[in-house]
Length: 366
Image 1 (cartoon, helix red, strand yellow):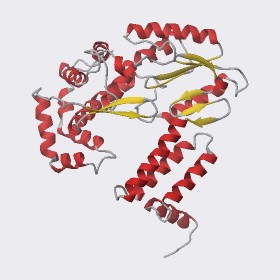
Image 2 (cartoon, rainbow, N blue to C red):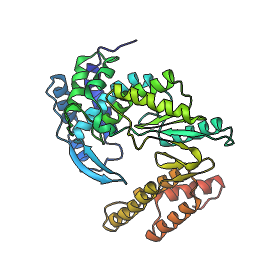
Image 3 (cartoon, rainbow, N blue to C red):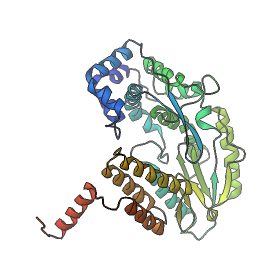
């Protein structure tokens, strides 16, 4: 197995820190803390570089708040300068460790995501059901309190298999130790880029076990959600027990009440969707979240807190996402409500669309 010993200089390189800044500010360019950091960018990046090179870097305390989405979740946000460090770390580690991940791991990876996972599930569903003509069971486990129970020692040992640079390991420890939930040396904060990346490293043990030991053909994972499809309920029950034993070996366990084997025709929950044999539905929580967001947009717009282009872009993105399920009436209803809330507005995005249409029809209106 190839290992990597000299990564620290690349991590602390000014160009890497500058790239990390650009990634950290994405979609947040007008936030006051981004503007403040950018206003003195070179000095701020050089200061971070100095702190890293001389091992004096210490992350700021996390800012914690509660959201209901619809589950109650505790989100912990890092200061912007610490997010730059997180991106700098992931910039170096991701190209090395992503190669060790299986194809059917879809969270927080380039060219993956929820919609790719949904398409893959459709592909598996058609294959195993012979185009929806045979009965299919789905194992839908739930890892008990995953982000709260991730064991730091286990995670570091997994990383050390490939990463032999002690300075990089020092930085990872510093980041992990900045979060405390109930037990020392346990847990990762929801909201950090590093937590999402470390989740893939940690559960790659599960991926490899399911694919190489159990030899399950129809397996998909998205963060701590995963599914396995099979003809046999007994086989899936056996998989469930063996997976729980594997998870216990890495200091996790399945939730005894929430890990279920269900018939596909009852509907299977995937991130944002509920999938059946012949159709898909958006989860009610997803719809309710966007309806609440629209009201927030309206309030901000009326107070000149957001421009219409940004609202239109967000709504158009959600409607495009909703197209992946059977939501024609819902999208029509939502579009109508949106137009009623902003009756006299038109975005630059819409104008550019119309220009392209006219040009394609070779119509001049100037």
